[in-house]
Image (cartoon, rainbow, N blue to C red):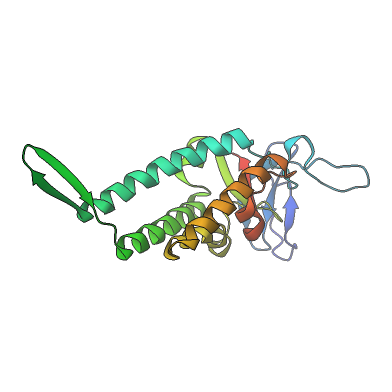
Length: 205
């Protein structure tokens, strides 16, 4: 497309496979070609057959849970490295006892790293390592753009900052987690609480 005045939207790009579209932001193409949206009766384009409303195929709940598990394991490994400096080894006879003394600095650092992990991977690569390894990407729900903007990616990961709130932060995070799990299986676009807040969907690459 050479017309710089063309309004933003989904169009077929020259050279792309037939039956595909990609997003034109008014200046340049964003992302790769996607299967054309499926039209519903009345001319609406919706999430038919697992489509996300912009022609992309939605990731299944099972796939998303598996991706999240991978990310949790990676994050746990990072936390162990960070926490190594807070572990004291006190010798009692022939037995070494490990005494873990978490500090607010450690909790704060873990929350910031978790926020940066989700935000930066999602913004620059389109998804966290767990999602990418299993062939998923995060896209903006209204236009299908992936990777999403930095603001959208940050909104989606904002719940990681609950680690700063002692006590009640963990309770809120648990509530969000349970609600998200339910929504993952009941929402027509498999959007979790943070997907709703940020306006995102998770799609297959």
